[in-house]
Length: 187
Image (tube, rainbow, N blue to C red):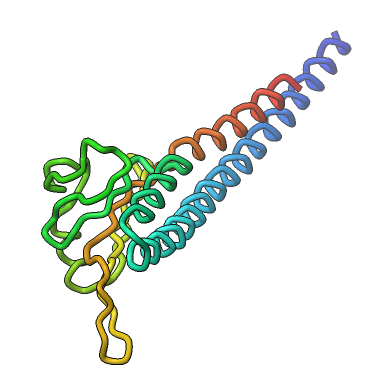
């Protein structure tokens, strides 16, 4: 009888220690997951801003053909769901999806916000909006005329509109955390 009581007590203590370990490990893993998501959000926002600043230079200084190629190349090689150059009248001039071109942006583009577009166009300031529940970033980036020594360069004027998808990166992190949890559970 004593042996059974000792085995029961040791089993209970072992179960308690293992349960405590699993709870602590889960809390630490969840925190790591949240930190990784924050890092992805910050790095993605920085990437998009730098990428669109580079695209802005291509649109302002290069020929029409080069501008279209530059925009298309970015749209294909990155996680942009939408990437378009919209003129000051709100008409899509170039876009990664040709169905959008020469149409009104508020009709052709999903998730396009006319109010944000007008603010960016008028104030020439970048507007970045992160929609957490949909896992994408929308960016309105100004393309403007610039003055150099009292001379205005004949550049394009308008706004670059982009929607950048974060869901694949988040899915990778979630799969890594899930696989780690399975391994610890089996252990």
